[in-house]
Length: 385
Image (cartoon, rainbow, N blue to C red; front, top):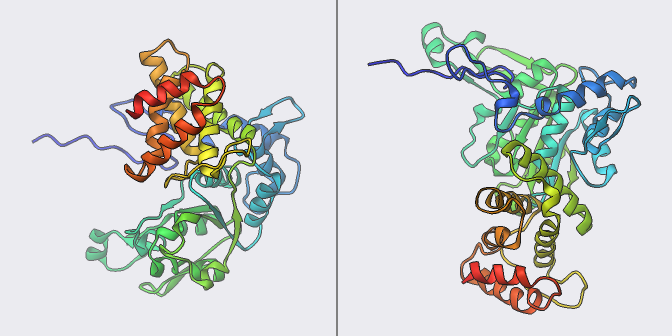
């Protein structure tokens, strides 16, 4: 029986063996890591950055904030914004990583917590891949360490038989580790972080040794507000974090800007039509989501019921991207109401009974009466049945 071809795991996520003699470059992957997708911007910032840098940081705190918020460097290099929101939030998050406190990014789903976490790690350490994905089944080994059982059985406990977790590797190398969806991890597993964050030490009792964090180590965790009560953080663990709340976009214009930027980035990777052709429809998606989310129309005159879903900015990005794909492959390449109607319906109607009533009422009392929205109303009525 032939031996199946194996896939080599890259050290930094840059190259993957996709066949004999053919390494995969960052531009060939569907979604490059932040440090590869924005390598030119990071290099330009590093070259222009003459401010003090904490130990093992690739950039100064000022340059990290500029990388996230955008700006123009003295040589004319344009740094694209990765996060559109209050500057002070980013400054506090970056400053936290320069102290001995870990950073907890908190917010409702779709407020770019994972996105900000990835870009912070990329700018600070040049590597955003030291990641623990939190789930109900995340074991303690994912945060501490595991064992290569073949070596363990053959030679007994040793450093060679130990399999370091991303957190352990970050401690040893002075880098930034990431823990996604911290509150989804069981409470007893969460608490393995207490010693790591307070003492900056990871005991190895089987070996009578320990791993001590070197300067530059820190940790970014994310959690969403909707998960409160799932596996709430203990007070001891919460004290080890500085919590930064990422809000929903403050204004419709800001949210339209965020959606347009992200859809443009995704569209380039998928060879979809450019965003400017669909700005009007992006504005409609954002308007619908905000009104249903807030329970009131933008003019403040009409109260509306809110559905069970979050209707986040991330979901708006997904709806518009799906609409652009429809327009590209089954239309004329221009985003129209018929292309986004089905996506909006899927985002709003999560509970087939209750949410459908909310959606139908919103269509008839708000959308139907709005000037210039007749085509959008007809498209939504068609997909809503």
